[in-house]
Length: 387
Image (cartoon, rainbow, N blue to C red; front, side, top):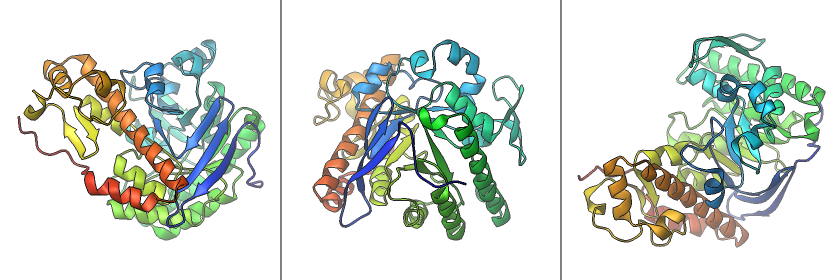
């Protein structure tokens, strides 16, 4: 691997650091716009944040979104995206887009996946067709449809797993990263995008340290932390973050993959994370679970039927400023699609508001007290439906 300096249109700088924790306030610049960090990325897996228009996503405060290589390579495919003028034009989003490499989806969705040193052979979960994804094709696909942040292909194994399996997958992830770096350079990727490497290692502290060191030495613009939030206890996730935060470069953004609950955003930022993504807020919304300062609630509960006031009076989203909790309750009880849309808008705006509070707290050196205030009120689990 060459040196770890990032080049091209991508820039990142740390603007402030909280004195009592590892929380950082930063600025990430891409060719399609600036992202203030910490930041949460709504997930548009298949070139859409489910149920929402791009301008609605933007109005929630989203600066950057995520799409997925596995899904896009299967449908609509690279040729269609190129013919459309690229992913941004195809989906009508003019801001930055980060695309995951597809490693997790192959692990979780594809059938008959066979991992070899060359890459992964698998059958599509859509039509059963035989497909292959290698480090080189993962990079080529993402550059081909115009991703602003390209993720290296990694090898993820399900947990619990034997130490040898986790070690082999972690070491393969490092070898694949070398190939991704070379493919990215050969394609002139640094002139168009940024390449992030992915730290793996399961829940083994030594493997995590080795992986963080490998990512740190690579010619990548950012460091992603994968293989967490996969069912492990929250304290274990926090421990793994603390381990890698001591090793990952301080001058590059750190991206915790697949994490998006409000309490986990605070926890991750406290340990030096700059970027997050997750389907959780919109998936919960479509299932009637909404975020409030006191925690998640089920809008279908009977107690909301006559609440002719906003669900969250302090929320400035279009849902809370225009509609009552009773109306949301009615929409979900009646099975109206508008309920899914309004709930999704609210949950994304709730997270964006939390991120804005976090940024201000870091700037004002009050992160610890701000986090304590949040945790004093927020309960993460929806109480039993009283309907």
